[in-house]
Length: 316
Image 1 (cartoon, rainbow, N blue to C red):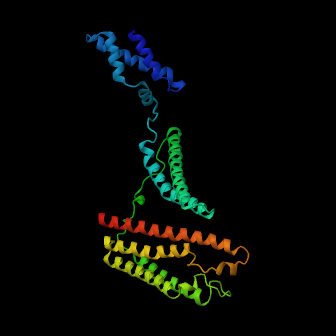
Image 2 (image 1 turned 180 degrees about the horizontal axis):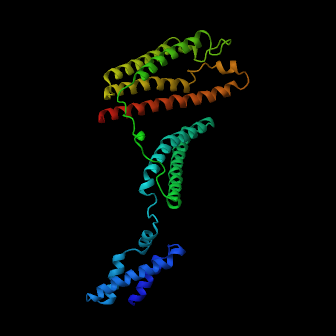
Image 3 (image 1 turned 135 degrees about the horizontal axis):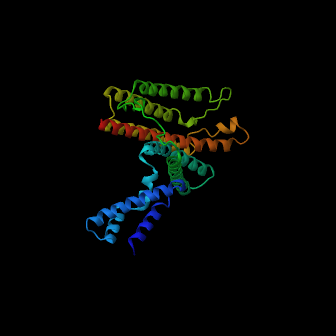
């Protein structure tokens, strides 16, 4: 095969992705450059056919060469958009995927599905949502990078974007919040038992059988949790023993509450039929399921947050 044929083939391959209005000029420029390099090698005593092959090999993939001519990116997400893409995907995965899994599990539970079906649907739905989030976010960023003119980052970094130092202990607000939660829970339980959850209707929301032992147990756990927050505030950091105590307290409150809720011993069975004579049992079932998800979700989130703060404190 002649050197001229190789040159024409290379130029034609390089010009395939070049816009029509630039193709003739770039083809002529590339052809001239190739010919000059070949002539230089031939003048040095190298055979023309070998010189042609060496020059074309040195130029590399013609598609890559064309991309350099036209400024076309050869990556899906380039460096100027990568950090924006990563931040957005991270936020979406942390927020949307758990909410989607929770919503699917809640819907399956309300429909009366079994435990296996609930878990399978929630996990499968979470994976599907995650794949779609990553795919469509990447797709949009790829389009923006290729067609936005002039190209540039979506956000301009300033010193205002510097993250705040992570707190390794508990602030005064958290300690006050723990005390307020204890006082609010005490007041709510007292009101519910002695007055009634709904004023004018003397029926409690919490099952009367839980008085006084069960209610006292819950208030003691809340008091210990508030005390623990105060200790962490004084120590100024989360330690592994303190984190372990916090996790145990979380489970000590959530696990019995979920068990009582599942066995129908937490909510007064007369409450919903009394305040909603028509359809009260169905409403009670829905509220019970939602309450279970809230209790479990709050417990899991508190444990994750405690572990995160403990790891951050150890690294600090």
